[in-house]
Figure 1 (cartoon, rainbow, N blue to C red):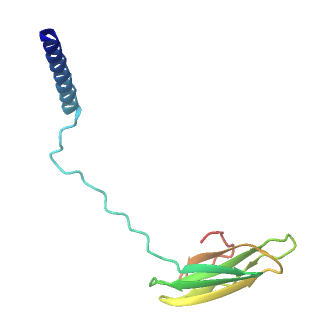
Figure 2 (figure 1 turned 180 degrees about the horizontal axis):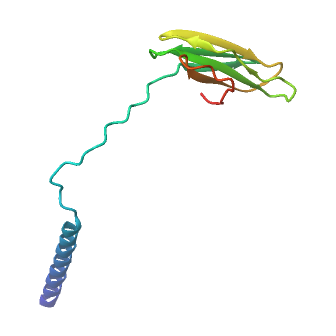
Figure 3 (figure 1 turned 180 degrees about the vertical axis):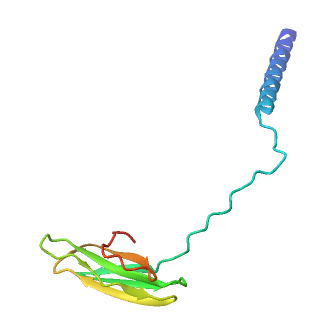
Amino acid sequence: MRAIRHGLGAFVSVAVLLTGIAVAAEVRAAPAPAEELPVTAPAAEEPENFGASCRTVVQGSTVTAHCQNPYPRTDRIRLHVECERWWDVDSDSAPVEVGPADYGTITGRCWKEVRSAWITHQPADQAPDPTPVRGS
């Protein structure tokens, strides 16, 4: 019994010694705190919240987009409709400006089924983009 106690005591002593060495190595490896605070770059200008919140509804071959602009900048929106049939003509609506705290509705349609519909946004102070880019 006495040999087990000495063996356990030796094991615990070695474990504590190894733990102390590991902690000392970690402390030694840590960099010393800098005397001066690092200079941070000025914060980049955050992007302005922009773009009307739009919801599209497809009923048969007709697509309706309901948009509401909660931001102080006018948003120019366009509805793009892609038709399912190869012979059915896809369409892009004329740009519609939705002012601050304003609401707008745009409709589009296909002859038969609608494959997809999406809205594009552009600030009203920029020139209209002649080529629509898919996105919302």
